[in-house]
Image 1 (spheres, rainbow, N blue to C red):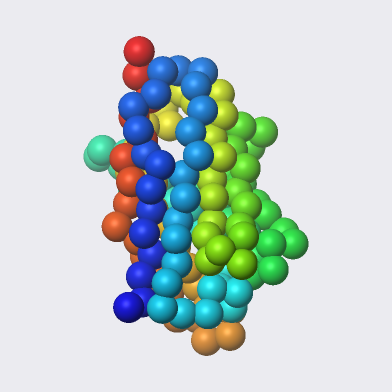
Image 2 (cartoon, one colour):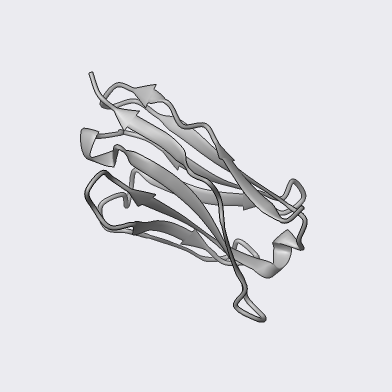
Length: 118
């Protein structure tokens, strides 16, 4: 079955850390560029971070630069988002996105909730 499954969301205090995981199955993971998006209540979905199919290049939204790190393990078919120094404004549902670099086919995960609150 072709799918992306996110995990690792939780309730965390401001200043804390979380690591999100997105496990891919049913397709050739190494062909896909990967992205993390997030959507807060009442707001549009926004791109947080992205990584190329080889993992050789990454990009971040200005709001998370220096605090979040995206990485991937192609042997484990998994992409990660390490989130440090979390702020209440990071509260959102975080979604994993995969795009085939050859044909543009796109997949989405179901999302994982991150809540930053004291």
